[in-house]
Image (cartoon, rainbow, N blue to C red; front, side, top):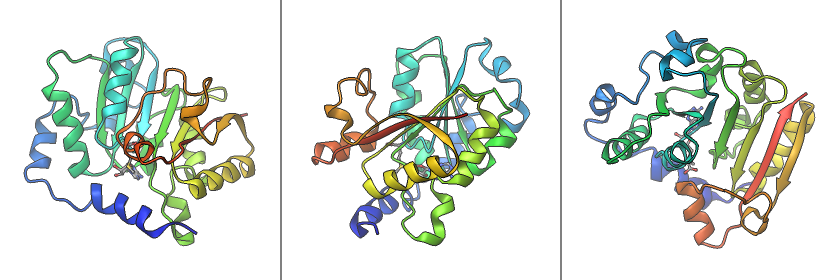
Length: 228
Ligand code: SAM
């Protein structure tokens, strides 16, 4: 179903490298929320304001999240990443900035735990960027656009609030459209070539993966959805 080399490059490039001292760097970092379940329902206190919270699930090295935080100071951004070896790159990026916006935080966690960290309405928007394809059928529930994850998102979003998903993986995109349909979510917009779509590409912020794949000529797929 999936192109093997496409899958392999993702898994090897980000996961398996052990970065010495990553845990310690993350532990000391003030941008990381170390006990996120304690913040459930109190995210305004974490940020010191009542601005809306947008999260990126599977943030990777943090470029998208930090750029969004710079562009939109009236939004609070939280990047969720499950591996220390990846999160440490975002931490290093944040710490190397001369002037850093105050409106972002990171959490190291498996997104399966989202409902224990965010109450309903704590989050206004969810970004899923270049999520892992998990090509084997038996791993479908690990895909961040699977019905199991849509169900988790439904627990933290209010009905009109959206999930925005970008990928270069056609099969994952088609799977996602089908899951949305089967779960009776509403498809607000979609494109099979984001960078050629003037409307959907307006104000697009590229992620690390997006830059890499689009520079190879891969079209980028995007959809926006919410539950009724
Ligand atoms: N969003 C970034 C980008 O577009 O450049 C990174 C994309 S990378 C292919 C997918 C990231 O999602 C990896 O860093 C992986 O560790 C993270 N991830 C996958 N499943 C996750 C989960 N259940 N919870 C948190 N992070 C997850």
